[in-house]
Length: 431
Image 1 (cartoon, helix red, strand yellow):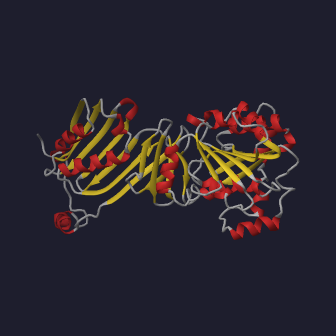
Image 2 (spheres, rainbow, N blue to C red):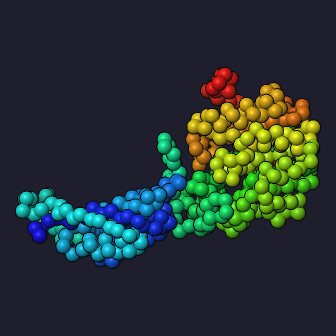
Image 3 (cartoon, one colour):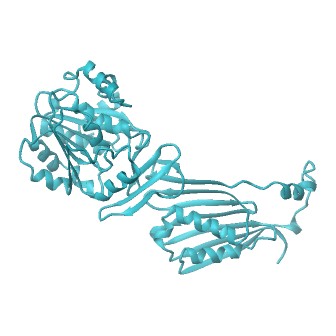
C-alpha cells in the first residue's frame, strides 16, 4: 500500500436496528466509542435528530473525523471514516460500528487520500518544521453538541440539548420525550413535535386561558380536553371564583412525564378543584349533558395521532351543545403561515356553528412553534365579546397579582388585531 496522508473508508450498513438508528443519544455514544476503540483523540461531537426520524452527526477527531447519516425507516446507515497518519486503524472503528448498530450486512471501500508520492511538502511560514512539536504540546479539549430538529419538507427548527433524554417512552398512543435544552430549559415532544418548553410555554397557556376566563362574567365550571402537560389547568386554577375544572386527557403517560420533569407546568395536578379524567375527550363530550360548562378549552396536539378527531366539525358541534347559554369555547388553530388550510377550516367550522359575528381569531407568539406565530379561536355562544367585555383594570390587576409573563389587558386587546394577510386569508372565498 502506498503511503498517504489519510485513509478514507466509505461505509454502508444494512439491516441495522431501526431503534438505534433513530436514537441520537445511542448513535453519539456508539460513534464516540468507535473512535476510542481506534485510539483516536476526540475533539468534538455534533449530532442532530430529525423529526420524525433520522440522525446525522460527526465526531471530529484530531486525526480527522467519523460521520454518519441514518435512515431508520430503511434500517440503513451511511458512514464516513477518515483518519490521518499511520497510528489510527479505521477498520477497528468499522468493526465496532457494525456490531453496535446490529447490522446484518456491511460494505466498505477504502481510498487513500493525499498520496505522498504525488505531493511536495513545503515549509509554510515555518509551520511545517514545528508541526510535530506543537501537536505534542497542545491537547485539544472535547466539545459536545447534540441537537433536536423538528422539520417538514420546507422548514426546520434545531434546538441544542444536553444529550441524555430525561424521559423516553412510547405509550399506546404516541412517543413521548423530555429533553433538557440549553436555550429553553426542559422540553416536551410528542411524536417528534415540540409541545412546550419551560421558557416559552406561558405565551400559549396564558393566552389560551385568560382571554376567555377574564371576559366571561362568572366562570364556575370549566372543561379542558387534552392539556396533559398541566399548563392549562395551572392557569385556570389561578382564578378564585372557579368552582371546578374537569380535565380529560387520553394519555396518562404525558401527565407522568410532566409531573416528573416539568414541575413548573404540572403544579396544579393535585389541586382540590381539579377532576382529572383519563379517557377519550371525544367520548367524554358525546356523553356530557347539554349546557354543562361555562368555558370549554381544547389543548390538543396538532391534527395527527390521538388528536386527529379534535379537529372535526362534528366534535365542535358537540362542544357547542355542552356550553351554557353564555358559554365560551377556545382552542388553538395552528399557524396561519404554514397551516393555512387547517387555520381556515377551523375558523369556518366555528362560524357555521356559532355565527360569523361570534367567532374571533387571535394570535400569540411562541418561539418554538412553527413560524412563532400561533393562532387561536374564541367562539361565544351568547352575547359575550372578547374585547367589549374586557375590564382592563381587572385584567391588569390579575396579571400583576399572579405574576403573569405574557398576558395583560394590552396583550389581550392587541391579540385580536390581525395582520392584513390573515384578514384577507379569512375573507377570501375558497381561500
